[in-house]
Image 1 (cartoon, rainbow, N blue to C red):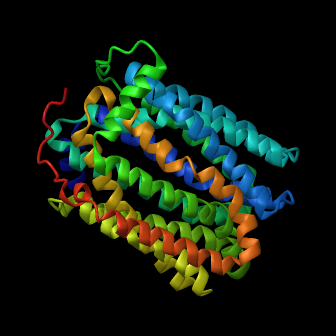
Image 2: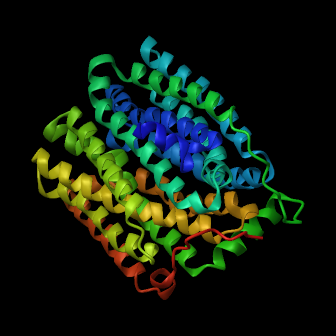
Length: 412
């Protein structure tokens, strides 16, 4: 009865929203498995921490270099078509990587090339995916739609991260990545069922560069927007190497490979609890509250540095996810409620670029730096930067004073 009621009211009453959430959720399941599988695939091929950083950074660099084009295309072309095409192509490329690993002819350079291709595809569709939410629900249901979508995706990732280590240990990295290929195929089918009007492109700029200039001008028109994108740059510069390079090594060596999967699962559980809280708790100054709780992300690297006990590691990972999710929901809603429809995909692309542009560098240098200064010492530095940068952002009046709207007005 409750499930039937949920489908007959609220965001889930709209078929296009259900297809969007279903595709994003099943894709998130595979995407949670792949980082764990890829990390151990590189290590099993004899790769070092530096090699692992190079492979992961190849994906991150490709995403950053392509995402601006994805934002422009997302404001010019049907966004559901961008999602469907990207998911279908990703299914093919991930299947090829899986076959290479299973057959035993995979190499570290091949894994890096596969990362580049999938990074490009994800970047082309990412801005469209975020911008499409507002087209699938009425304005007064947007806040709940944002929270539900993130909750569904994070729940899927909890399952993926929690089971990834065990899946790799039992069947190998190749079969784990094959699961990701299958989820992309299912996602492509879901995205193909979405039927929403094409967003009206109001900019007069005839070129890619002109569209990007208009998007950049919109970013710098909002102090809270460019400031927190800068904070995200620091976060990913330092934390990207922790999750992509140091985590699998530090936790894998001290507690076992399955423990790293459980730690990522605990992080995602924090996302789930934080997401559930945002369904009920809607602070008037949500961006301020979210940014304050973002400082909790320091708990995960801190736990890695100070303890080799699994419960404390899981607690640190949970607090990281909890604080980050409350911030992310309020951040996403702030963008949805304050950016015009015809620029929305470009703003999301600038958000992704600004946030992740330094991540490839962090992935590459984390291994060498941590080797020189010590893994635990570097983890403490990372924790200080993550927590401190979030708290410093609260000094901006633009962050403290931005208020949530009860309903999204028509934006032109």
